[in-house]
Length: 453
Image 1: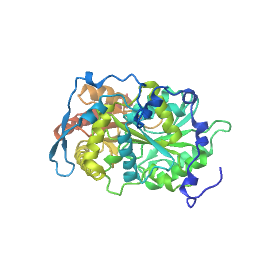
Image 2: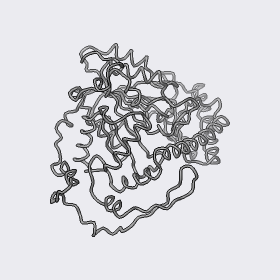
Image 3: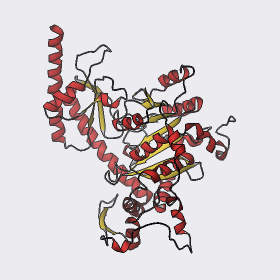
Image 4: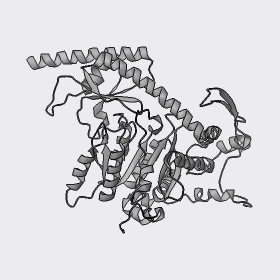
């Protein structure tokens, strides 16, 4: 491919369709279109009388109306909303595998509003049953057994089984309070074993990473983009906490935003979710990706679950249209401040009960604290292990949290623990941390006794 620069017109910097051929998995290449679903859009063509699909007649559906109250994002005043008969009929019926057109159109506009990305820049968008659904389908579209995936670690434990199911090789990429360890990643890639295929992708959560709570700096993001070009890998930007950023510094641009001004455009595959700010039960996720990958995901949907639920999409679209983009921004800003306050309460009580017994960095987004227990029980690698303390001792004392080992693909020992601050009121947080303090003190006493013996 010819050497390009940021001064080259955008259309010339968009990676061509054939670029992605080596990245696509064998299973993705073998999938064929559903011959019925691929024709469904033609039903909307003016003048067409469709005898195509076996859709149930809506006159047989028992739900005849639907109303709900919607809270205004600025005033907090509730407004009654009723779905029109047309909206209800659409919501109760089959729909396109990529998502209903009106919602897709609104979300494309949201990506321009939030990330400055416009249609015609080499990417497409589809809706999913939460972003986890879309991550699963993208990972399976890209990875074959034996392929290598770089996984930012610690990583959300729920994605490890997704990568594991492909039989790929997962290689952890560490980080610090600034984000992904780009120096270590560069060394890894520059000293890659000769003859071994290089990684196809890097999976990263750049805002409020679950579990670490870290938000990657602009400098680290730009370094990752540079490394992706130098070593030819794709970036899976999983961003469920983008709208839950409450750091003091300005929000860094997303990878999706930044790549528009790079010499090559089309290495970023972005996963968005509104589950954390609208409803986790509605499963609102959407994918922004190069057309080839977006199309592969839609094809996977056709052959697995046909489509994401239509009623969820109709409800989401009605809500979003009522608010508009500025209204959504006002809402998510209020939600972010809500979690900012919850974080401050939790951290204040951590300082009260765990000062000297644990160490942590203050999260700037998300819902979690990631803290290292000072157990005084060192293993061969020089770091304590939180597994037994959290899974047994803490649980026996009425505290449920997650030991850090589940957030490492290799399951290695670690002294870290993940605790969520999203739900509990202050009095329950205080009691939980008081109990955890006693557990740590007991563990330290046991460790000293074992060492003396």
